[in-house]
Image 1 (spheres, rainbow, N blue to C red):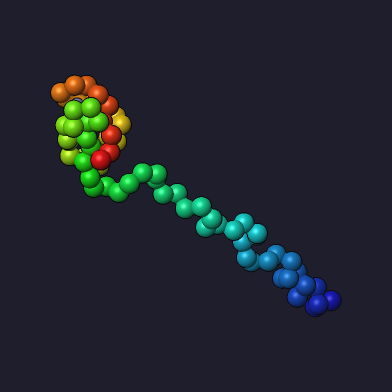
Image 2: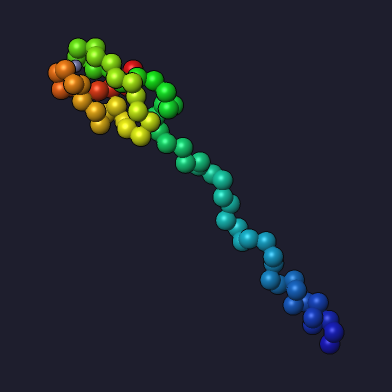
Length: 69
Ligand SMILES: [Zn+2]
C-alpha cells in the first residue's frame, strides 16, 4: 500500500502543461524612435516625437498629413 503514495506523485506533473510561449514577440510595427516627420507636399520637417506618430501630425504650413522620413 505504500506504493500508492509514490504513484500519486507521478500524475500531477509539475511542468506547465503544453502551452509554448515565446512565439510571436509583440514588437510594435514601424521604425525606431528616432527620425523626422516630413511633409510630403511642401517638405516641411518636424522632429519626430516619440509618443506621436507622424501620421497623427499635420504640417503647420500646409496642413498635409506628415509622413515618416
Ligand atoms: Zn506641408
